[in-house]
Amino acid sequence: MEMTFRWYGEDDPVTLDKIKQIPGMQGIVSAIYDIPVGEAWPLKRVLKLNETVEKKGLKLSVIESVPVHEDIKMGLPTRDKYIENYCTTLRNLSKAGIDCVCYNFMPVFDWTRSDLAHKLPDGSNALIYENDIINNMNPLTGDLSLPGWDSSYTKDQMKSLLETYSHITEEDLWNNLKYFLDRVIKVAEEVKVKMAIHPDDPPWSIFNLPRIITNKANIERFLKLYDSEYNGLTLCSGSLGALKDNDIIDMIYSFSSRIHFAHIRNIKITGERDFEEAAHMTECGSLNIYGIVKAYHDTGFKGYIRPDHGRMIWGETGRPGYGLYDRALGAVYICGLWEAIEKGAKSND
Ligand code: DNO
Image 1 (cartoon, rainbow, N blue to C red):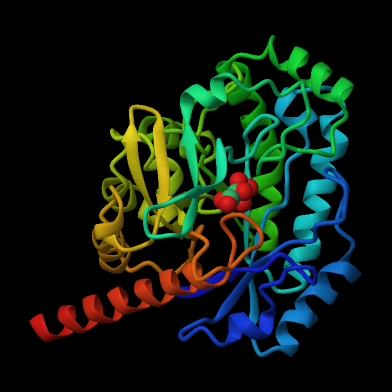
Image 2: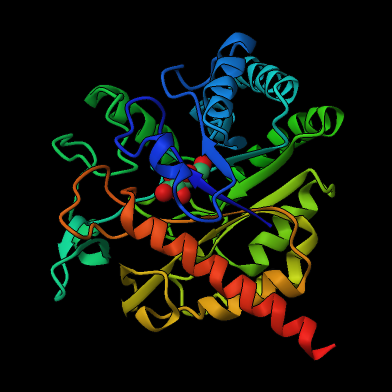
């Protein structure tokens, strides 16, 4: 495995210099953030990003994300142009040596939480999700700023998006995903870039929008839509783990050859559809992080791992979920587990 860390570019207060000081850190997960969704990423910009990261002695390992234009998810006639641009981006990323791209297929909203800085008893704060609160939110009022709320939409755009989606069923979304994969994975194979879909977070429908990458059966269906190593997964333990029935360890064993990118994070399930983000250690939440890391180890995982969201600790402020300290603790914890599992396995031989 290769340990990586998400970096949001030059504006990120968590700088590459700081990331480099985390023991065991090898790679950077990043993206180009100022290119409008749907446009092709110019080779020059990709090479520049690569150079910035390499100059600091790190490697640009994964692109998270190359976002998918809503017209593709909605299956509109304009999708072909956006799919073509997507393929151009993949070709350019490949020329810069990138071999893994993370994306998602969630309509309108990416990851969604009800509170970005919920105070925990130890004085830290974390992102939480409470279903009742989300159900009472109105995406049309536009006065909210939560991760996943695309503030680049005007109220009218949001209204028309939600109106179009109200006629799109889960089956339609599956068909639109297949249409996308049939065109993109061919190119991914050609240029050797592994595509890694991120599961829906949370793994259930919000605001009546369809969500499909939510559980084991649906992931199996997804992998069969285009049966290729290049049509793979970002297995995000915290996203899928919010549903008690999702057994992450079983998924790692079942899908090992198709997992290219692992997001490792713990959550504490506090209700049927409620959860708090927790520190990475197993004892801090509902997920068996030791078991998850062991499953990656035992299946010979050669892909990229990153610690996922962290709490805000030690007075840090910044981008919710993406401060330095708690994520760094997560990375080192995962490396520690890996070392112990690896050495344990050797001494048992
Ligand atoms: C949140 C992230 C997601 C993820 C995208 C991938 O912290 O895991 O925003 O990057 O869904 O496209």
